[in-house]
Length: 322
Ligand SMILES: C[S@@+](CC[C@H](N)C(=O)[O-])C[C@H]1O[C@@H](n2cnc3c(N)ncnc32)[C@H](O)[C@@H]1O
Image 1 (cartoon, protein in one colour):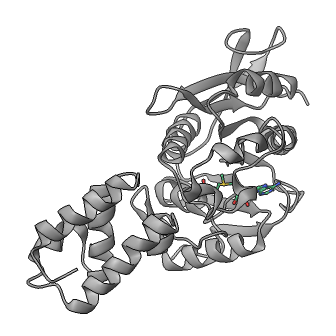
Image 2: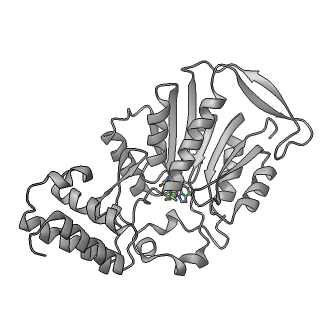
Image 3: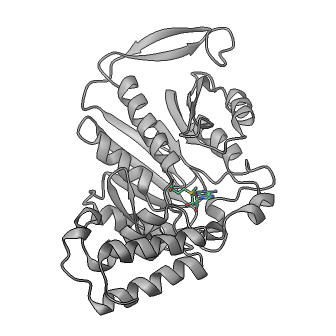
C-alpha cells in the first residue's frame, strides 16, 4: 500500500474486509489503523502523514484478519467493555460481547433496586415459581453496606471489574471471581491491576464454578456468563470463534447446559435468601433454564431480551427454603 490520504486508505481497507466477509469493516479498519498509530480513533484525521512502516504493519494485520480470520480484539489484545479497557489473549480469554454488557447493566440496576434503604425480599407462600404467590419482608440495607458478589467463569475479568467499577461508590463490594482456566485468571488479575482495582475488592480463584470460593462466604449476588453452545454447533461457528477463542469458554456438552446445570444448583446453595442470580444463556434455552431454576427453588424468574429481541439474560431470586 503506498502512502496516500487517510480517506482513500481506509476506504480501500474497508472494501477489502467487506469483500472477505469480515464484520464491521469500516470500524475495524479505523480501530486497527488508530491502534498502530497510537492515537484515538476519533483523532485519526489529525495525524499529518502515515509513515511507511505504519502502512506495512496495517497491511500485515489486515491480512491476519482476512487470511487467518483472527478477530480484531485479539490483534489489538484489547477490547472495550462498558468503557473499560480489557486486555485479552487469543485461545486464553473469551472476547466480551455486547450481550454481556446487557447482563452487567441489568445486574447493576437490579442490585441497586434490591439493596437500597428499604429492600424487600420474596418469601415463597404457595410453592413460589414464576410471578405471584409471595409476601414481602423488609430487610434494611444501608447505603454503603457490604455486598458479596460472585462472577463465575470470569475469563478476562470483564464482568467482575465492571461490577466493581459501577458499584464501588455505593457499596462496600467484595467480588469473588472464578474460572476453570488458570491462564484466564492470570489475565484477569493483570486487567485488575491495570484498572487499579485493589486486591481486597476482587479475589480471583481457579477452579470449577463456585467450588473454589471460601465456604464461609454467603453471596448476595451471583453473576455469570457461562459457556452455553451445544458441541454439535461447533462446525457452524465462524472461524474467528472456532480457531481463536478458547473452546471451553463457549462449548457446553450436547445440549449447551452442561455448565449451567451445576451452576444453578451451586448458586442456589451459596446465595443468601433472596439473593440474586443474573445469568446470560443461549437464545433457545429460556424454557430449559426456567425449569432448572424452578427445580432449584428460585423465585421471581425474569427474562430479558438482547438487542435482537431474543431472551438472553435471566434474573432470579433465591428462595428461603433450600
Ligand atoms: C463465555 S466465557 C465468559 C468470559 C467472561 N466472563 C465474559 O463474559 O466475557 C465463559 C468462561 O467460563 C469459564 N468456564 C468454563 N467452564 C467452567 C467451569 N466449570 N468452572 C469455572 N469456569 C468455567 C471459561 O474458561 C470462560 O472463561
